[in-house]
Image: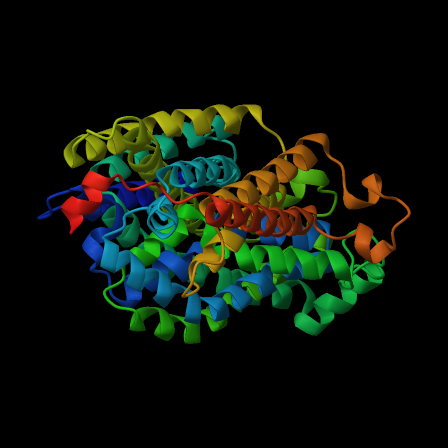
Length: 497
């Protein structure tokens, strides 16, 4: 009961912070979704860098260290490369967004390609990708609260209660609620991760070196990449895909609009890779759990951090760990809900109803938050897959937006709106077909070298995306040049003179 009470306090504190964040603000769509573009270095850091510390950190990273070993290291690598990319990418995005008063990620594509239809396509792709990501957070929320409370709160009730809480403060406070809750989340989770990652290996093995030796002795080769399957080529292609897709998540992309100035991104890019090193301690927990709580198979490997915590620490500390885990679901979950609602209201609904006022769009976005929460609850209760599998599927989808984004940043038009749309559609369809059918590059073409067969299928979709985007752009640009110029009537010509 002590652990449950502590978790309850964390939930109440997060809800209070989220609601108080609205005070003194008129919540138009710009204020609700991008904070009036007034966030400084710390808030932007927590919204961008702090996004890596989700339920994925608590459960997925430790679960993969427990169940798969060395392939989990990809989690440590991809965000560090993405932060380097952010040094050049985000200032350019921010400048354009501020100049054109953009609100959503889709707005960026609409303005760059002068195509509201392309913006609607980007919005739909983003929302489809964010659903598994939100499901990931809710699944993790249920697991964390249920295990930490020793089963006193069933997983499905924890998910429902948490979803109601984040829906309430997102609807009322928007990104301000997410930002203030992120402060509490990051302080708590960093403390918990460091304590667990340092204490557990020392407590059970006497140190980190002894821990690695014990794991290697029990499972030879577990700490190195296998020669097939999740091999070196899988590792490199997955890191590349995830790094390119890191800022393609609509909630992360639009969170960059909230900065006060572009210097915020360059300062953050210097420190964010160091922040990523904290994930090492999550891996240490997973490795320690291999021998302390053996026997977790498949998706149950995601329970490794919580199982070893409940087996080692008193109830009050288990409650703190559970409370920190609760926050890792609420903060990113709130951003996902808010961004999905904004994209659908501003870039899909307004395309169909262009006469809608800003106030109507804002109100619709707020009403869409609970609607999207219900959809996510349905998939949470009726879907499978492990935590990391859900994340990888979402990354493969949103990364299909990267080629068009990169081309749009050039000084001259490299890609037409038709080419951008065709590339995105081909990439997304490829990911969807492969994901739903369960095929791999190896099963499709068994005669290929092993290094090719092991490639992440998201990279194959990205290559097809680029090829189609370039071909369609060339064709539509040529067609545009070869079309006859409109004939000018004599009267019009005279009038012009």
